[in-house]
Length: 541
Image 1: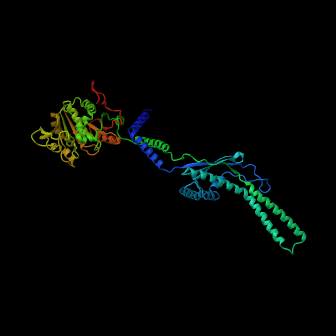
Image 2 (image 1 turned 180 degrees about the vertical axis):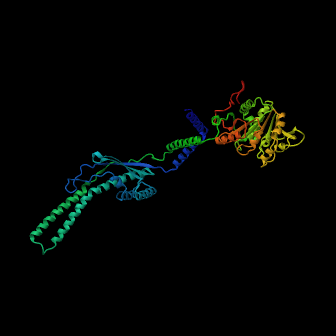
């Protein structure tokens, strides 16, 4: 249950972190759908209805005054609507219809021909409501779609008429066959009567009487053909629609927005579940690594304008660094002139800037701090402090003259000068980049050098290379009283922290804890240092 609660809370925090992205995606999708829908041509739908009465059909030859078509089997009307017997007459009638523009006639004619060839009607569709228990009686609704209301109405009524004509032809078909049979028999009789020399008087009289009967029957059939009716009859004509059925921009936009909201939330939830980066103390608990502080991210604009140290003061990082300073002092309690090495798992996680701000925090409480930039390949401490104090002053740490970089100082630890970057903070820059830094550290007497320098300071901060990038930190860490690891919020993988801890454990390093750097207070409020907790009488600007 506890694990499930942690997962749910992590999922909720992930959704909160990317809430702007989720809402933005839904909004963009809704707006795109709205304007796309508005750009579509309107579609008007008109409906005409037919009633089907399959019962009560009479024999086409022997019946009474009217003749009815045979009953319609299930699906026959739908198949008939997609046949040339219905669509071709419909196209012909529609092409001569008045009140419809020539462009609309051409468009609908083209669509009907294409749909007929593909046997997939969309312009005219049929909906049936048939009661099979009553012999197939029911109602058929013809829906016609067009870009103008006049065209939709005309198309629906003409489709209804075309189906009724087809149904009426079914009723007349058997009558026409009977009439053709009578005409064939009359032709045979006329041939026989034309043979003057072969017929007796009695035979001739018999043929004449038979011919008269056939003519009478043919006349009755012709009369029945005029009275033949189909199963389908008109129930109601189409009424001209007042508003288009589609597009509906607002409805489509709302549906698209909801779909975008669900999809983006699902993607964010999946990303959150798969995210294995360090974001809060809970992520480090499974590694048995205490979190000493969560430091907010600085704005890049402030860093460019004023430098990291001054930007950190103005951004209110004092509270976060204050927590870190107290935790560091507690962990180093009882050690005289302690040495703290600061490292990370990979480059770019902010260890150098955090080293500078931490030194500034200790200096503000009156403690003297020495920063040793021991990242001999990519030293950045000098660049970090340049915007804060471009001048700086060199003064002697030990001996006379001598080294002005970490590289030279490790080779000649008895004569070293350091750069004062602010009151109570001295810095030994890394110097020119070197690729064989490990051999230098292995050859130098680091214990003697650090032991000699530490006597002049309350605390030494060593800015070392990342643990997973170089082995330099393992060599330096042996001479440090404690090691502080920096993890970047949302970027440092937990697997990298685990690998760095294994490497540090094998090297005998004393890891005191971790700092989660560059945290976004808007995303993760579980460790927000309360900047609104102001002194009594202070008024908000």
